[in-house]
Image 1 (cartoon, helix red, strand yellow):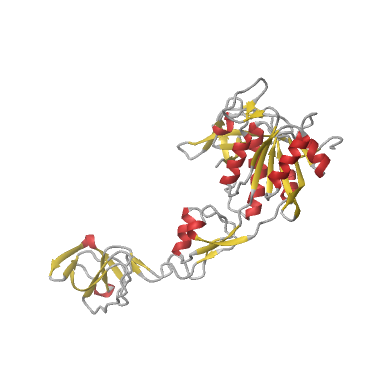
Image 2: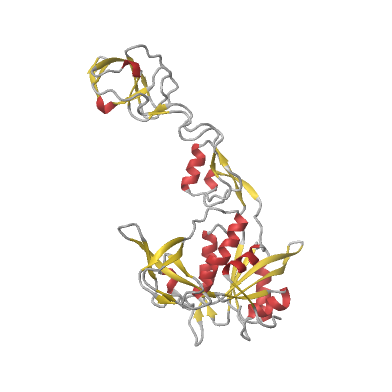
Length: 414
């Protein structure tokens, strides 16, 4: 059982403490068609130069620059479409019609685009405004050298990254295995959406948020549960939820009340650690290693216990659960926090880092400005606040009054 006053930590201290709960997972090789949303475990390198050969950037004519002068007339001796392997010889005064992407003849060094050529008929063209040497030529390796690292380990594979890997000749990639992150919400007051509400009951929404947020961050869910505040019932549910999980996220029951089942059970049965953070919302937090039954024995599963108020749970997912998932995936490409200017002020709590859902706009001068997404700011019970926001703003612990013109760091919401 938890006894005495809780250790108080700031956000960074607590995050450092819990990051040790997980390690990067194993790897697997996937074809590009199955790798969307995964995280690279090994760098992707270019199998060859990109482009692999000198080619034309325009529909036009491949010429020898030494032949060019204003009004020069050249004779067309070849026609090279994209995909051709032909390398026609070009003598003095000769040229080849060429399409975009087609290989540049070895004897040519410049492309004259079709729009500035006068075609005279009988295979003759006139060039009135000769271009500079090398115009519209894409040289071999212009984009990438053979063997160049094009995507680092830790990079998330979106459509752009997959396209780049394909362009570099890589049919497959080595990625981290997806972590299984199961979710359970707790509380006698919780009922599923759509059920009739009795006095004292609320619709369960935290589990919906946490499961979808983890899935969007690259995790797999196999179990999503809801438990009452009965300790034995909760423990049985946790056994099932943890059995096949790499991480379990709990919400609710982490404070110091008489019926806070997460704190009670994790403290008594798993030596759980509970902290008070210099954070608003999200002061009470906890974690444990839960010994769960598994096929052929038992396994210890990291459990992250978040507060139960909706905004607290959502904010703490961003601050603590997401970094754990990133660590398991080896992900390193998160966008850094960015500064923004406060449009309208509000009050904060001394000694606690305030996290406020905000909306970001960019003015005509390119300055990012923020306003509270909800009039109540960071009130922990406000279900709608995060849904209305596109970023979180962080007010330092020493600040009690945020005034227009202040600059705060912000974190974009996915």
